[in-house]
Image (cartoon, rainbow over all chains, first blue to last red; front, top):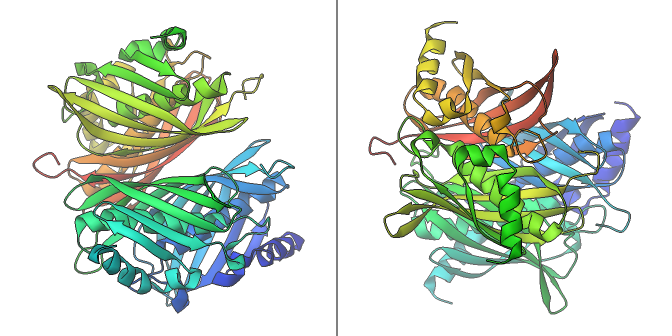
Length: 139
Length: 139
Length: 139
Length: 139
């Protein structure tokens, strides 16, 4: 748990939306991250599964952290695609993202989102997205 | 504002996550929907923009409503792709989705997300996704 | 059919792959384009439908032309997503793309691909993608 | 090179479009595939790179083979997303895809596309997509 993880936690803590949902940053290294989100009642949809928007949020944020840790400047998500693979029913969500391509002004990353069921992790979403360096004037 | 809009509102009210964020259903007709989300502080990221996950949630939910209103059974999102077009800074977000292709077991929809700035609406995200009929056993 | 259409045709003619497939540029205006591809036997897969790769090619190229006509410099596709909506069986494919967001270094566009069946056009694919300005050194 | 690879080659040979481009199936196992495409002149765009549509074709086809080898019935691509990571300039393209989630009626796969430059392989595109079982009546 190095200083990069601490830095990542300070960024996550500066995101009101991440605090509102209850997300935690488990670890951050150059090009990879793990986020965790306890599956509280307020994250669900009408069938009792985690809402797709929750999985999309986690994937978006994880890809941004993984790529941002390589670009080392302020970044924003340009686009993302997520496939929902099974209903997310369990005690927590874990998102692991890696940067797969890093350029000067953008990077591309992939993310797997798992739902924790007892001792097991089950893959419940897979995402891929692009991160852009934020221009000084806010894009 | 017919009975379909009322029905849609009852579904939205049954989604704990939508209540947690504060989403409202403005109107629902067969194949199209308008959702609205006042841009409260808790929806933002560290630069003061609406978090990408919020826009993804809105697009996901809007596409699901637009397509579900055609399929007329319980549905889940299979996949979605969203492009973020400008920082979402304003008083509210409006998501308008339409079903563009409806089959027996799945439908595809598109969604435009606008940020309200004063009297104006500015396009801030564009999405496209697939909705699946939920099998009786929950997939 | 103004000079922009002629210019677009000269670009299409400079793409060996587009000549290899037989694509035609019907019209090009700032921010919108129409491409046409007669559905020859060599464009099909084993079920007799147009191969998904053909539809992806058309969507990719159409979005690039629509966005490139706004950016007015050399561009490349950064990413694209396509939904296949019905088997493409007919006499020709028509792709119509529009730019929906144009910035200084990138643009986002959408494309509808239709298959021509007799006198009718049927929507068979829907795409969305991002175009980047090509840096002087070729990225 | 077992019988599954031979079976895959017979499918590829039955796709007129794959023959038109010159694609080869290197190996096929349950849930994974490798396709190869020599980078002939007719696959390029006007800057001399492989056309994006070529990379999309390869990714689409590879994901379909990887997922189809698990589903073991006739399949079609439902949707795909591809990120182009660098200009594809080299002697050949290699696409490696794996199925990451397999259900009864659909599967989701990922694909990495590499360009061969001398002895080296460089990642030039990354894709993710959904495959559907083809209904008896052709959808």
